[in-house]
Length: 480
Image 1 (cartoon, rainbow, N blue to C red):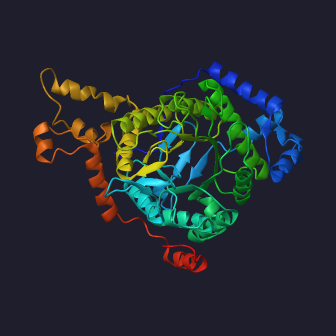
Image 2 (image 1 turned 60 degrees about the vertical axis):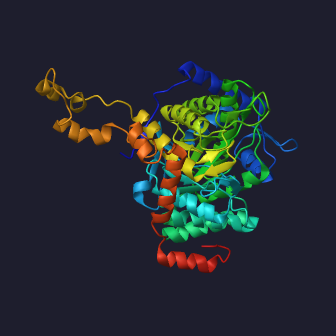
Image 3 (image 1 turned 45 degrees about the vertical axis):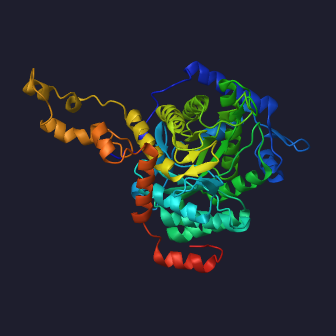
């Protein structure tokens, strides 16, 4: 069974008292410490709307009243659409979806297994593979086309993604011209600017820096995306022990300050902008000083932030399902499964980076994406939990079968077995005799064969023909 949008929230690493304490600290930081905003446009917006702005230092301080008004004004529900309605995502409360993330510069070649630079063809192939996988709900464009000049990257990444999946497409942007071109391209595909806003099948990411800093270029992008009315994620990436305090609670608090600065700026620019509270938080390896992707602490931070997002009633863009392993192996499996599971059970709404990434989020893998689709399916089955009602308790069936019988041929079994159990495609559940008969393949090789088959045979929903021709005529830099 394909399970999407399961309702999480059963895992709560923070108590209600913890949430109140973190929230009060967040407000104190806004009022007394502030956030550095080295962007004149943003400083003027904050100043005009009543924030305390020191233009010489670039420090912005926000009062409790202003904070509470702006957070309350951010939408509680954000709908991210697919080109096909069946792929729409409703982000609210503790409803959870998992998908891809990036952007990385390398991938493991599907044929050789060797690490190589990513190309535009990889953007297309990863989008098409993801489109064919049942449990991956959205496509955050996960790889960078190294062969293209920077000014051509945005339109090519989004065009290649939209051409190869009918699921929702989100991505970072690299130039202001590229941002505006992508929006115009999407408007044409939608049929009009109004239709794109009614059914936004693209969204964008503008990061906030740690600690407590809005990047100048990203802030310009954030303001433009908000003005355009395009859904927006404003994640920050505190690294516990480096760019945030070493404790998980303090990292959660600083992440809240940083991402909420982006959320509030978006609301000041364009009230009602569909904005996602966001996190790419993890911790530093205190032995080597390096970034970690697959630590359980990263999962716990994002689970705690899911509760904070639910407290603020803002949908949450989370990070989980990553690994520090260099290839699809045992380490990749347990790191991805444990972090994705805790974030999903906590009810993080939009869990990105959960499919296909390896090696500290620097390398993408086709076969790992196939394996991760199965891990995600398992997580969603756990989130769905145990349904207890008259039908699932099956009292009449138990009475009829009675002591010493069996339930294999019962109608209750026939009616429910497809939906009650999760059925993997990569995992091997055969006897050793049959496994050896089929070649004694490990999970990586089974996933590689599935990936090859899907890439060879899956046909995504095509773009509207007239709009596609018009786009290709307008944007000569696009390489279809």
